[in-house]
Amino acid sequence: MTDILIILAVLVLGALLFVRFAPSDPADWHADPLTVAKPARPNHWLIRDGGDAPAVLLPQPPDQVMARLDSIARATPRTRLLAGTGFHKTWRTRSATLGFPDYTSVRVEPAGAGTRLTLYARARFGSSDFGVNRKRAEGWIAQIAD
Image (cartoon, rainbow, N blue to C red; front, side):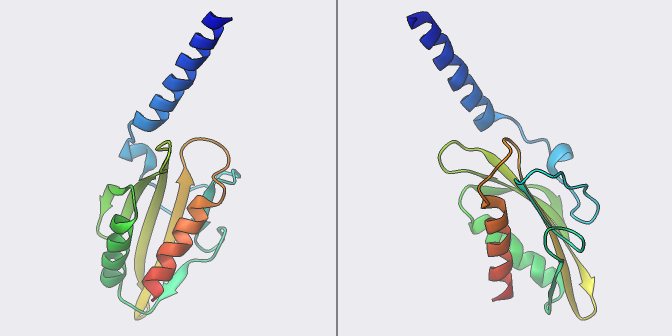
């Protein structure tokens, strides 16, 4: 019985270490919110016309929106830029306790005198994120709109 518990503990620890230290290849996670095919899993949140919520229209020009968004993302705990430049970027945010990675990809583009923002937030592991990605996405957008 002790051997089984030791083996189980090693397997659990190995899984936790894998989740925490698995590399994030930008080629896999730097998605375009305008073209991505969203799976039906509840741990994905897509903001674009035809997504979970419509694209966001903002009165500021795209360069100001992206600069503000980049500042907001970098101020978010455990978040860092994974990939992208200009008007298309992806950030990785890790959960506080176990370090589960989530990815948020954003594209901004001119829309009249303002900006159209699309966003795709998703978890890498599991099937539910308890609404964390949606909450982060909506929080970032609310901060930009202020």
